[in-house]
Structures are given as C-alpha cells and as structure tokens.
Image (cartoon, rainbow, N blue to C red; front, top):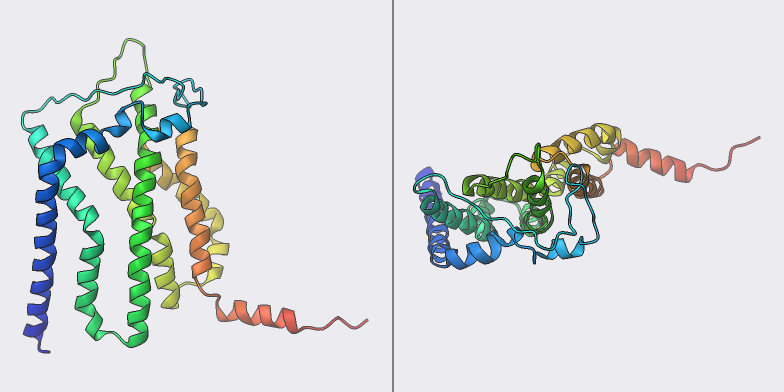
Length: 273
C-alpha cells in the first residue's frame, strides 16, 4: 500500500470510531436523566451497596467516615447557568468513550495489524483482551469503592460546626470523572509492564530492586486519586495498587543473569569438606 492508501485506511478507522462514539453518546443523551439518577448519583443515597457492607464502621468524621449513619444522603446544587445542560452533554460523551473503549482499541489494532508478524499479532490479541479487562476492573473499583468512600468522607468532614457543606454539580462530576478515569488507567500497569518486559526493557529484578521506591510512589499516587486526608480511604486505594505492582512483576520475564544464577544454584552439588 502507498502512503496515501495508508492515510485512507486511517481516515476510515477514525471515521468508524467517531461514528460509534457519537451514536453511543446520542443513546446515553436520551437515557441520561434515568442514568444520572440511578447510576451517577447512586453514591449519594444510603442504599449504595458499599455503605451497607461497611455499616459496622463507626468513624469520628475526622479520620474515618461514619458508615453507621443510615440516613446519609447528599443533595447537589447548581450555581452556574447552563451547567446542567453542559453536564448532560459531557456525561453522555464521557460514558460513550468508556463503553466503546474496546471497539476503539480494536479499530486501532485492525489498522496496525497488517504490519505485524504472526507472533506479534498473537501478543497484540492477548494485550487487547487483558487491557480491556483491567481497564474495566479499575473503573469498577473506582465507582463501587474509591469514589463512594471519598465522597462520604469529604461530604461529612467539617473544619468548623459553623460551616455547612453544599456540594455543587461541577465539583461532584469533576471528582467522579477523575477518580474513575484514574483508576482505569492505573490498572493498565500490568499491561505496560508486560509490554516493556517483552521488549527487553525491564526484567523482574527491576521490581525487586525498586520495591521501596514503588511503595512511596504508590502512596503518593493513592493520595492524588483520593483527595482525602483519612488513612482508611488511602489504604483502600493503596492495597490494590500495590497488588498490581506485584502482579506486574510476575508478568515480566526473568533476566538472563537471574535465570543463569537460578540454574547454577540448582545444579550445584554439596560442598566438599
């Protein structure tokens, strides 16, 4: 294929992706009122599943959220003209991208697949499936665990009894988008490690040597994803992130020196006395 043929293929790929996203966005726009009340605003209601599971947790509101309060609820306010309409549009496009993410990646893979060797195609198929699964696992963890805990803590925290918390629609949606997208992207860490390992850039020794630095960086990243000061929520985010780090190490092949040393140790006989 000539350069212009490749450009035509890329144009067709982008048009298919754009048409699919727009079609999904229109669908979400039509059902957004129901979806907003029953999905996006579900963490604002006391019947959210996580709240019932943690109903035994009695917090003081400063370091731990009080999950025993069964009357918990949040009402949002809007202070800018046109914000609700723009949120209707932005939420529709955001959800369309999230739900069509596998199709978008598949179309991009179809574009580059003709230039790959058969073994590279097999690896790309595995990466495609694994990456999508991890992305949705991260998004689900952000929606069902991380964001509700952060919302519960921040909505109940008070610097002074004279200050009343009034949560705006903009603030709620910004935190909602950031948390879910961040968790989805962070869960791609094993895929990134696997690809770097396949390319020979890193080995398993990289993870063992940098574990203490990884713990510090993951703690900082957990604090960025959950802008709360309570240790409980920070710990809830840090545990799966550290598990991802250790899981990523298992996906990376051992280096030659590591394999040779393991083989030498196993073949060595008892020492002579």
